Amino acid sequence: MASDSPDLVTNLRESRLWRGMSQADVAASLGTTQSAIARLESGTADPRLSSIARYSEVVGLQLNTQTAANDPSLERTAIEVRTSLTNAGPSEALRQVVQFLDDIAILDNQAVRHAIMTEPDTVGDRRWDALLAGIAEYVSRRSNLLVPGWATAPGRFLQRFWFVIEDILGRPAPGLAVAAFTSAPPELSSRGVFLDQSSLVSV
Image 1 (cartoon, rainbow, N blue to C red):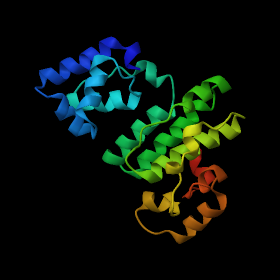
Image 2: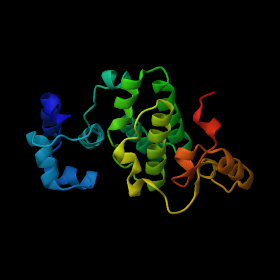
Image 3: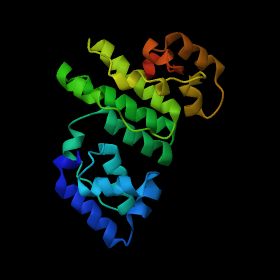
Image 4: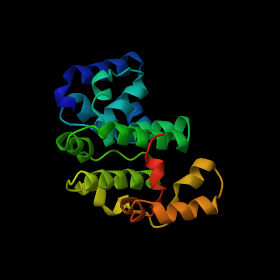
């Protein structure tokens, strides 16, 4: 990413300096190390889009997302889910996932593969990380593609069942939880994520 956009990395560094922030300041905001920020700024690292986006937020730099908007990916969706969980809640986060599914519905298999092949950064909630891995497998199966390796990592599976609808409603919903238990796609339920399949379709 950074090697393809040297101007962007330069702009990030200049924005940091203009705000009087050190590399350590940015690292603390991102939950990483000063050396990682130094590698990013020097061009010796190839950071994910999500890392660039989070850095830009910290230093107040507006990214040009015109191209990104035309190129759906789970990596980008994870950024949107993370932002939604922070600012709007789980209902909006789920809408971002459904939007991703809508966006790739018209793509050919090569474009679909590109959209799911790169492992997204964590959104800060293991349940949503597992859901996104399930979505990668869900999309792969329906497009007759190999499931990306990152989606089958142990960290992408939950130890306890999670009924997404109860998070969205903010309260227990036994009837809806049962419906989700019986109708969740196997790519999600195998990870302990239970979401009615109809919830993955926009209306």
